[in-house]
Image 1 (cartoon, rainbow over the protein chains, first blue to last red):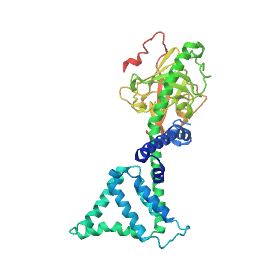
Image 2 (image 1 turned 120 degrees about the vertical axis):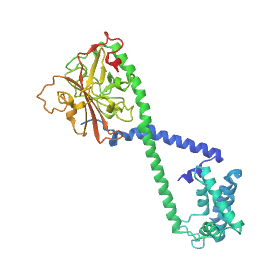
Image 3 (image 1 turned 90 degrees about the vertical axis):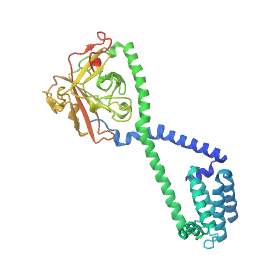
Image 4 (image 1 turned 180 degrees about the vertical axis):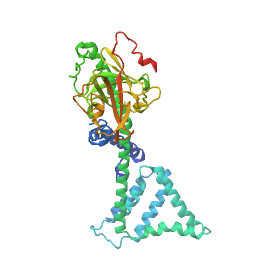
Length: 51
Length: 358
């Protein structure tokens, strides 16, 4: 998977490095700001009330 | 098909940055040449066989997005080979060791490659999963703090603005003058001088996860500040601004100040301030307790008394949060009782005395 991404990225070594960085940043942002906030309420360890 | 592979392999190598990866390139070319020489007699061009051509192998070799790693590995390996091949005086065991991968490469490939590819793919998935989980921890502990801090600032502005705009939101009527507060809206400040004179959070209405994401939340059914009964709050221990992370350092007698539109209410943690014994209060209510998540008696009008027919005669404050830290196995509960009447904010422009005693 990673080797395929690396081979697919264009632009020689600098382009590949820049592309990798962009990919990592984009996926991290997607996870941090969309996926995690969305999935979080269904996870158990945020229950802090007595009920 | 073979030609395609070879051409692709050639392109792969030429993609490399020659000055840096020179040794690796030479290695790969030799690698490819070995395989080309041996060929794939066993599989021919049977398309049903999942043959991994040298392209894939060398391409995968070149693939990791961490060039220094690969470079060092390649240098070591080719250095080892070079030494074994060029130095006839080298230790025989060393020679043997160095030759192993070479013999390995010339072995016909088949099901082993499929398995190897599968295991490699599985390994990559597991590593990726681990990274995602790590990122989630970062999110829980750091990113939620940023979001909550931002929200707390907005809530503070909104609350101060509301108090200035609309006096009817106010006065702290015993009997629930504030009970119509919309869920998630801020309606009071909590200050705990023992956690720092700058410790202040906006209390929001409700204990839904959405409300608690913004700050300490008020159990809707519980009393309001200053009322007889039990003004109960829940707050996150870790993450989401960690409003109640240090509740365990509170000692008997420590002040918890609730600021409403026009009044400061000072609550004192129950127990004996002299000995630090939480259980010493005559009411029998402990200043601190650790309970199971099902123990709702903690937020009853008289904490711990499960009897609706007994009317509360004191104004209590209860803070609930997770225990231990990073877990939700139990709940850490702090009980406090109102000290004297509420103090008019007009009379104490610099804050109540409890704020400066610590």
